[in-house]
Image (cartoon, rainbow, N blue to C red; front, side):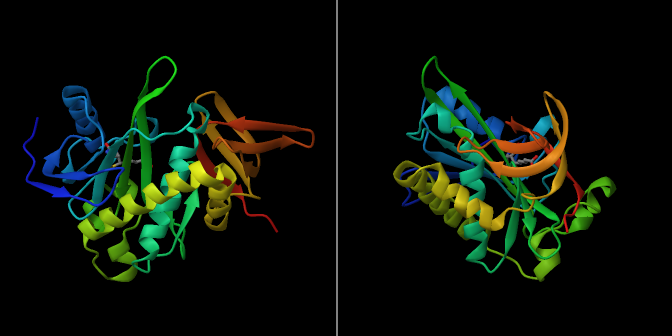
Length: 262
Ligand code: BTN
């Protein structure tokens, strides 16, 4: 296992320590190894670079220096039926954290963070975890955000699709401060879920949502669906109207916007 270069103690009950690394393969993988080895949760891994960062659907997540690559290793007190809300509540927390730095974002179900003014992707979330028979053993919330890096640090194929905060606003953000803000906001989001339920969080998501009301194509592990994105359910599923009388609930997938509505 790589040696950490810094250990930071936080005020957070959810994650009381941040372990900071120079380069790791994937902060999610390292978080999982540390949990299994020490049988402990309540920490964050952050790295300046990842050599094999993981994205959704087993895609490689390019992670050059200047981005925020981190994983929260936690054991939250939530119902198993609410697990699908974890990417949603994390995304809501991340948008609020970015807003404190005047970076306005939109959200694309299930876990994309987009720059508000041009809808280019600046980040994503990869939630992994371990369930025992009836309960949640741990969760790893992996967060990747393109912040102080430049688009030319990415492969040509990605350069058209993504952007970074630096490219959009010509400013640099202190990554440690941003991470602390994200931890606080995600902790608050869990509290909203516990105290007020999923609908309170979904209301916040809907203010930032970029696909509801649109005709979309969803590529999911079960197949490809075409329809109108009409809602997100209280367990985090996308509700897609595929005909006048039929709706389907989709747990995960990649959404492609088919056509903007009038
Ligand atoms: C997506 O495909 O949109 C999700 C990307 C999640 C990337 C982050 S970077 C930190 C953490 N470690 C990983 O290997 N992946 C996540």
